[in-house]
Each structure stands twice: as structure tokens, then as C-alpha cells.
Length: 155
Image (cartoon, rainbow, N blue to C red; front, side, top):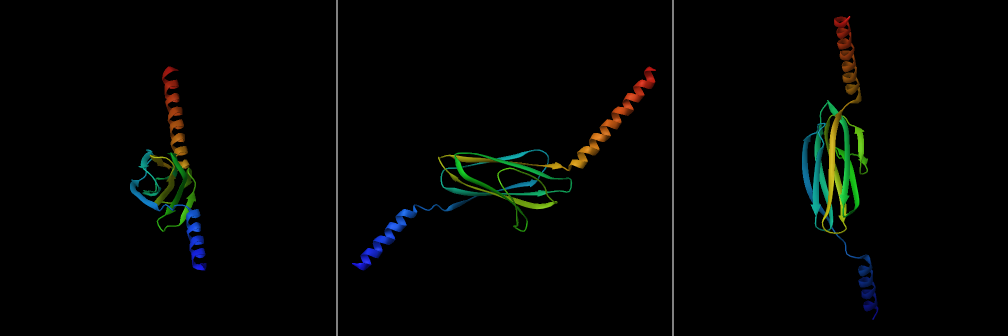
């Protein structure tokens, strides 16, 4: 009788925990070396949990990285940005950060609420702001030179 009582307690406790869903190892995407052109990747899942990995590298020219994540029919969406050693650098769904040249990867996970669940990850690498300022100064100087030459010809 005591054994039956313990068995019923174990069965009831197991039933209260609910069904456990294993996280499905999703796809691995190789984005190559990032450029200022936005790279957008969409992945769709029928059910359960997922974990996708996005590998990318940054060169010395483009190392300001901007990334966004959007989803539909997905709950508990999470993004983690890691360096090549696996150290976590950032968590959140959107990021804009300056990284050193090298290899990085992003892991995105979530749970499908209703089928089909999907998310889109968009990422781009932009030049350093100082490079933009240098280009802007060059354009201003070219404008002043052109204006001066037009003034000399007209005057």
C-alpha cells in the first residue's frame, strides 16, 4: 500500500511538470565577411524550440556591427552574440556595437507558439564613424574648390 502511494505521488508530480520539449538544433548559416549591405536571413519552424547559429567575420574596414531580429508566432526569442572563443558579448534582440576584426557567431533561440513560427535576422557592418567624417570633409573641400573655380571664371 505504501509503495502504491509513492508511485501515485511520482506519477502525479510527473504529470504536473508538463511535457518537456527538447530544443531542436536549428540551422547553421555562414554569412561570410560582413559588408555595409544588409544580410537578412529568415528561418521557419513547424513546432517546438529551436536554436540557430550565424557565423560571420569582420575585417579592419567594417567593424561597426548592427543587427536586428524580428519574429512571428515565436515566443521567448533570444539572441546572443559571441566571439570566436565562445565568450558572450551581448544579449538582446537588437544590437549596434564596435567589434575588433575577427570571427564571431550569433545564436538565436525561441519557442514556436503557433505553426509556422519564423524569425528574420538582419546584420550589416559599417565603416567606423571617423571614416565617414573624413569622407564628408573631403566632399566639403571639393565643393569649396569647385565654387572658387566657378567664381574665378565668372568674375
